[in-house]
Length: 74
Image (cartoon, rainbow, N blue to C red; front, side):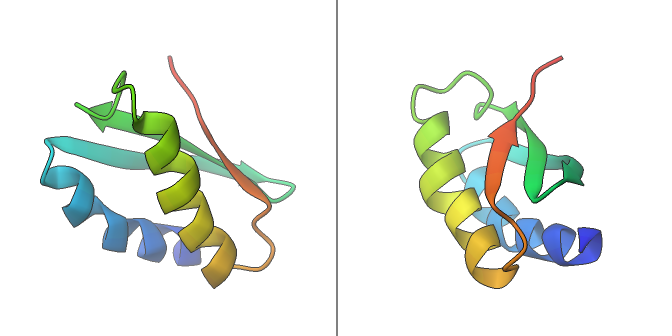
């Protein structure tokens, strides 16, 4: 499953890079994928839209066991 997630995120990265952003896979547990938004994505007012409408919808579509995606900060 982690390999599938990484593959899907690799497809999203070029889109985020156009806006000087990136995404990092942190982990997955019980169908919840944790990611870290980087660059300009981290703190962008539209980051939740990107996360839910972009990343989460793609991962849920490609990997049926994914239930949701959450961003983590540290």
